[in-house]
Length: 184
Image 1 (spheres, rainbow, N blue to C red):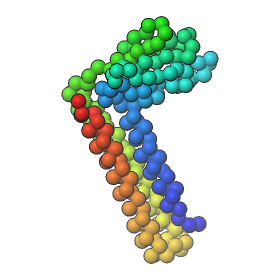
Image 2: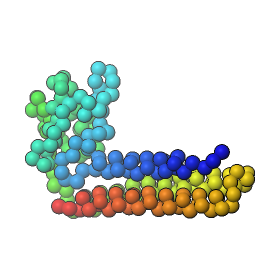
Image 3: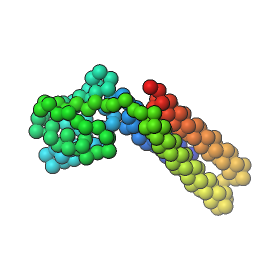
Image 4: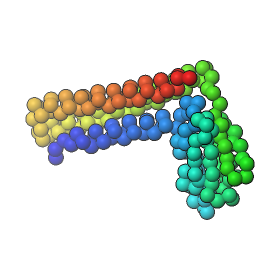
């Protein structure tokens, strides 16, 4: 059994990808169709994402226009938006739903940045847990004489470099999203 660092790198990359996907759903005062990613509506008995049952477009920078492919879905989409934690009241004109995003207050921006930093820290903890799992496996392989002392040290260094690389990616994502939120 040899040590495969790729498996641990894939797990770390998934952690970063998940964080970035979460960041995409945080609204920064501008209309962003990804804010609807987590919302579903009942479409012929199947929970479906709003993107798969409607055309979503950005109008005038601050307004999302949702045009369902079937008019019968308008009420369901409207209910899903009202029931969500988006904090936006949908305007329904019978053919489309408009979501107008208000300007974020400075207080709300600071609150969002705090949440972003918390998510970043949680992702860093996940990365460190992956590192711990990798180092535990390497120790076990050394103990069972499957690898040499030199291989053990080299793998430990590689795992640490990998960890540092992904921690930096998380820090960069947090900083980028925080700057985006604080920019008026």
